[in-house]
Image (cartoon, rainbow, N blue to C red; front, side):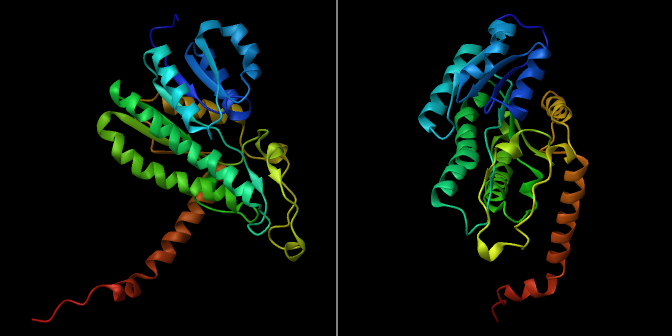
Length: 280
């Protein structure tokens, strides 16, 4: 597989559409190589015809841990080295917590959270063995704040943020950099493809009963968002968190300042839980 001298090799999940597909297209345009995974490989036939051996495609359902490990092992064996792993597979469900079904909860956690954790666990030994690499996880501004009727999606993003917070410290000694990608609302098909459960009677007219924002009115460009991801991935010192979109920056800073203010206001009361020093 011929490449340019400064090219990178990428592994991407969820490459069928949206930001995953955009990422594959942009890194191929750079002259890089890509191991792209998705449920239906034929969705990338047009790119395979155009880019030949620089695009390696395999079927992958990230909820199938055995398949995931096998595909990761095959990709590293095929390329010899993979510089950047991007965990992108995921989807959304709009529903109040009460209106969700058990099956919806299990499926989303398996895809958005467990699949991401198992991908990290599968690639870290390979990255360590090759002396380092980059591991990027698609999170969201929704990993720091929350909106009504989106609690299950927020569950997966807040959880993966905590996982990567610890993982980053564990793998840093091996030359592995991790980045949580935290975009705002991006003009992709994500919102149109999301499952939507009509609100039940008790919630009608309340905070969870809102019309969706049209994609055309969302703040962030898919192309510009992915271009920023690529720049960070190939930079000398990628950030642990990559905030993308002026909406994400504004909403996240507001939420974090409010959370910090809430914690600071409890300074004196927090100390009342301390153990009382033993009397001598």
